[in-house]
Amino acid sequence: MMMNCGAMNATTPSSASWSASHGSKIPMLLPRAICSTHRMCCGSGVHVDACVSTNVSRNAKDSMIWSGTSPSLYSKQPINKFLLPLRASVASTSQDVTIASLIGREKIGVLLLNLGGPETLEDVQPFLFNLFADPDIIRLPRLFRFLQKPLAQFISVTRAPKSKEGYASIGGGSPLRHITDAQDQNTVADGKPVPCYETHTHPMSILLGIGLFILPGVFCFNCYFLSIVFFQAEELRKSLWEKQVPARVYVGMRYWHPFTEEAIQQIKRDRITKLVVLPLYPQFSISTSGSSLRLLERIFREDEYLVSMQHTVIPSWYQREGYIKALANLIGKELETFDHPEQVVICFSAHGVPLAYVEEAGDPYKAEMEECIDLIMEELEKRKIMNAYTLAYQSRVGPVEWLKPYTDETIIELGKRGVKCLLAVPISFVSEHIETLEEIDVEYKELALKSGIEKWGRVPALGCEPTFISDLADAVIESLPYVGAMAVSNIEARQFGIFAVFSSTRQCRGATGSV
Ligand SMILES: C=CC1=C(C)c2cc3[nH]c(cc4nc(cc5[nH]c(cc1n2)c(C)c5CCC(=O)O)C(CCC(=O)O)=C4C)c(C)c3C=C
Ligand SMILES: [Fe+2]
Image 1 (cartoon, helix red, strand yellow):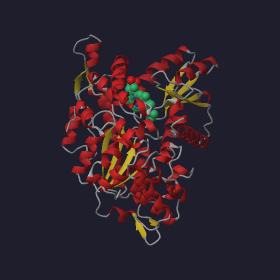
Image 2 (spheres, protein in one colour):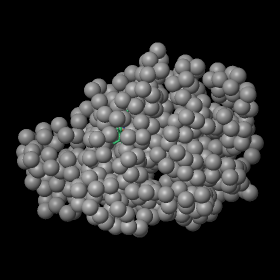
Image 3 (tube, protein in one colour):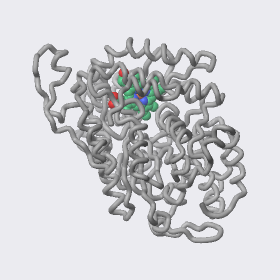
Image 4 (tube, helix red, strand yellow):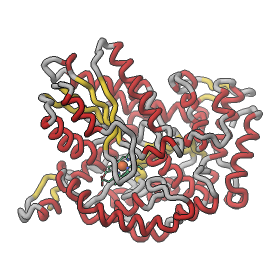
């Protein structure tokens, strides 16, 4: 069912009022799920750190307490060191639990979370409004939260022309009706891709004043972007089935169709009983995975069915072996396109966040990003690839300071230092979109060539790369033993709010036994 953006804005409870009423930025989604996770891991003695991380820590992700579902977050050890393969036993105090038995007759769902993008150029401003109305994107002091929506309106209207230009230059928008229609027909719930092979008249053509210039759907940016996400969903579903985990895969976008709310409705219609939530962002940020999880939390707390549905969250997965290896493969392959691969400087470019997110709000994004780069470089070193490399941050918006160094300044600096060959690696995205296709491929390439760099290359986003998809499937499977129920009534949750969550989680510290 197609949701109208205006309706979304009207019906979605204001995040400002949520934050104000609870006086905290800490989401409460899934607390008991984590609680049961804690019980399992405490009981098994597999990973005690996760069991005691229940305080409101300075680290935003720690305080989100979902991390209990992913023990490796607290360790450099790969996640599969702690979690056992399919059909292997997971020791609890009293009994062995096999993954097969965990699946049993359950209906397993995987919810992929992503940002979403405007379908047409007309959608750009409302899409931007949704984005800037998110208190995890523009973080206002509590006293000024009433300004969130007027400010979002102002910024979205002001930014829309520049944004539209970017979207237009890569194909503009196009009707995505067929995707949401497909969702009605339950094809999305089955994880089937809905590629856009249709022919559209692009708003770009009108913008360019060249009349009815028809582009094939494959150039339609948003169909392309959504198709990639749906292809990823489908490939993940296939991989899970191949690994004997029959699961349905859903896609929920934060700021555009198919909205997370729509995916959740489908999950309910399908009577899913165990849900794994997997943000399609390798590294956690308050502004991306955090925002989507906070939204989910709100949806869960207001819904009797969801409150009792077993679920778990994989908050980030940048350290997974398969992901690192897949990226190293792509980098190695791209380096081979240069005449002297060893002379190429590798420039990892991550989407930035305002500095205050990291320094004041405890966003682990920068730390995870740096660790991720270390892991990739270690992997490349094993393959005798020892290139010079750098990490920089792109896509800053607005007047505040963002994480540095900025990618554009880095490129100029490298040019000044005499670097002649540069390989750009988009690191915070797993699918192509405006930041890769326009900002990197067009703006940064042009800047690099102007700055004295002679040979430019760019590593593609992972998309449906098989090693990567297989690894995502493993991440889902490994999380299954940690799926648990919230087991708290709506009313109880509303009454006790965050304090109930913390006390319940604390009780789990000493608890033993299985879910
Ligand atoms: C890890 C990825 C991302 C982080 C972190 C992130 C933070 C962040 N973004 C904005 C503002 C905008 N982002 C926009 C588009 C956009 N952002 C990401 C990813 C991250 N954002 C993606 C993949 C995209 C492309 C979406 C698409 O259309 O496919 C935009 C709109 C485009 C534009 O006008 O430039 C804005 C605006 C902020 C403020 C922020 C952190 C606070
Ligand atoms: Fe962004």
